[in-house]
Length: 173
Image (tube, rainbow, N blue to C red; front, side, top):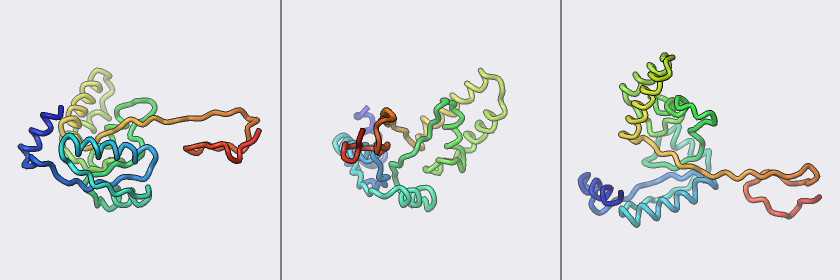
């Protein structure tokens, strides 16, 4: 809701938007997203994302180790293929493995500990929903879906490897 976002920005003292230094991990799944986000934030909210594109190792150093960033768009999945919500929730507990925002909430941590001990499925669902509500309220981070492209080829094709943009040079049958 763009109108609501503009209203909230004005209430927060930013009626004319602001500049937001943004680290972008140099990756095929992140850079296009950063450009779209930059255009949309400027167009709709007058928020100027100042993009600083960094190689993955430099980005990881600045964001995950030095904690020297204001806003970051980084690659790396926070999800899992079994879709167990505890894997994602673990990222947001104090000191969690992918807690780049350094999110810390004592109630969230208490619920996390309770979730780990709880064996009753309906109670686990209730605790999980409470934790998800907290994350929605506090919004320490956003996950964007990324479309992955997988290629398959028969064994009689040689010299073809799984690089991102496969051409035809150097490939033979």
